[in-house]
Image (tube, rainbow, N blue to C red; front, side, top):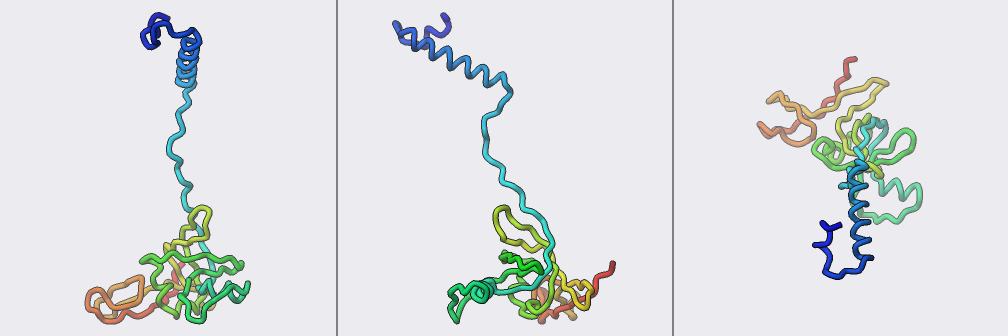
Length: 172
């Protein structure tokens, strides 16, 4: 008791000493219990998944299905409509750029592997391939001059010649 007296004003009522002792005992009990104070919450990890479907404009799909308002001249919101009828919004990344700019890919049935972020339907594309005549095909863009493969259409980074779309059957 004498140790704590110096922390209390001279003549402090016994009630103040009582609360000081209680606080000390609670702190000691908490420390001895092995409990740790709550730290920053770690967010859940994105879930990797594989989807099969077609690229669609989500705004047009919602207009068709649910009569959502849609301006005639609208910006396309690309997404994936799966075989099950689920919709995923595509995150525009370097690996997914072809799905946004090459309209030929919108006509194909695709298998997209990606990450879906917790509590969303936002799909980050990791890789994609097409299905033609029941056979899975690898999709990439190729420069015939430099023999360079790339993931998006446009010009070759080396010679600036246009790259061509290649669909090659995957070997099992």
